[in-house]
Image (cartoon, one colour):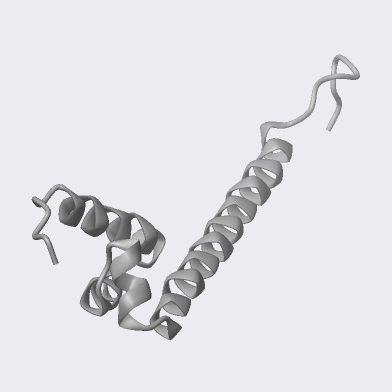
Length: 91
């Protein structure tokens, strides 16, 4: 195969770079989700009083872990925000 200019290359040569970028992004996203799930799971080691200080319950944590693995932290943050919007009950 002959090329007219030295900068020309077949379009097939661009595919591996694109494919490599997609695979790399997929791996990075997977590692990030795994790290987030481990962080959420580590909250289960805290006692109930500490969890209450954080504004979450054990059921919130279990629900976050049961959901989409890529958004477990977001699910927990939503539960916390929903609970903080409730009026103060005055212990």
